[in-house]
Image (tube, rainbow, N blue to C red; front, side):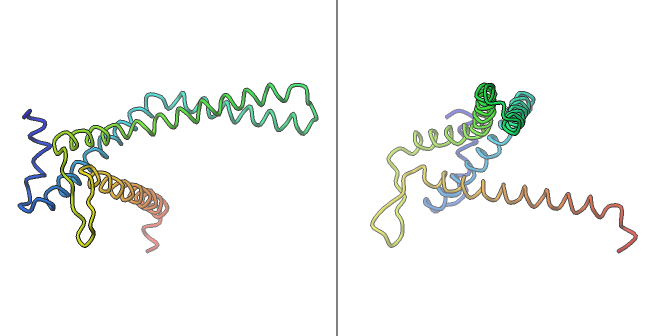
Length: 173
C-alpha cells in the first residue's frame, strides 16, 4: 500500500463498526474530492475566464446587433449575424460546461479507488431486502456536501454584502 493510499484509507479505520466505518471513510473521501474539484474548477476558470468572458460578450454583442437589425427590418444580414451569435453562444456554453465538469474528476477517481479497494462489497439497507453498491455512500455524501457547500457560499456572500452595507454605519447602532 502506497503512502497516499495509506492516508486515504485512515478514515475507514476510525470507527470499529464496519458499516459506519465505511460510511465515514466514504464521506471523508467525498469531502476531499469536493475540495479538490472546487480548486480545479477555480484554476480552470482563472486560466480560461478571459476566453469565456470574451465568448459571452461576443454572443451578447451579436444578439444586440441582431435585435437592432430586426427593429430596422434589415432581413438580408440577419441570418449571418444570428449564426455568429449562435456560434459564440455555443462556445461560451460548452466552455462553461467544461469548466464545471473539471470539478468532477476527483469524484470519479475516488469512486474508482473505492470500487477497486472494496470490490464486491455491498452495504445492506436495514429493513429492506436489498443493498447499496460500494460507491453509493461516496456519491450520497458528495451530493450532500455539494448542496451544503453551495448553501454556505450563498450565506457567505449574503453575510459579506450585509457587512459591507453596514460597515460605514457602525455609529448608528
